[in-house]
Length: 258
Image (cartoon, rainbow, N blue to C red; front, side, top):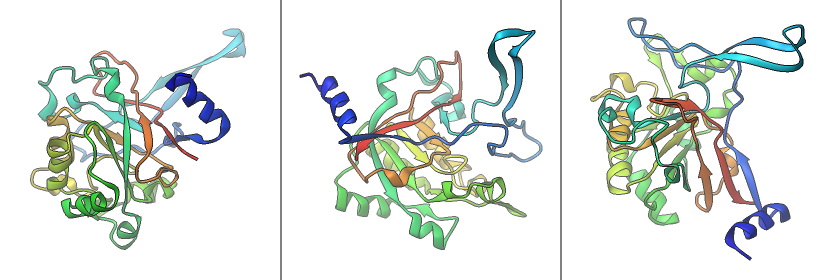
């Protein structure tokens, strides 16, 4: 018996499960908004090509119009200016083995319930490692915040007069994870991998700047992280192979113990 046949047998026996970490993608999927002087990413629109009618009597299909960073999506290094000159920095050029790795799930739901602008600090990572072991190289670090329970657009984007509010990573934590732990990337339940107020940080959007400058990836708008253990799951996060793509909607799957 090979490892792969054993994997299938364990899935069929129910010892392992596949967890869908992806939110549904449709016209109502929330999309991040930027200050009005910048270009805006549209939400998803769908145009029917044919639906068992005179334009196609036996088939149904649609034309999709959406930004690369819509819904549950992947951020490639070229998405940020710090990663624009790196090799293999676009969706079509990333080696596929870098899209699969172990998951380290850091649960901050209690902290976020008390403070929606919570930032994960290096001490939080060290405390997690004291309990679960050192974060391994080439792993996904997933921030479980409970944010995906906000199913309406208003509370999910959480924009007020001073801008959006949502949790994220402190600059020093992103540096620790990208450089000292050499992870694949981070994943969050929020609309983007930086905190809501990160546009006013120094530097602005430090997680994007640090991660993508180090050739790392981002996964945004995840859900069902409560179904994963702190360690022991494997995440598969494969973006569409868009030529020159800065990112892509994707279906993120995890294989986890039942």
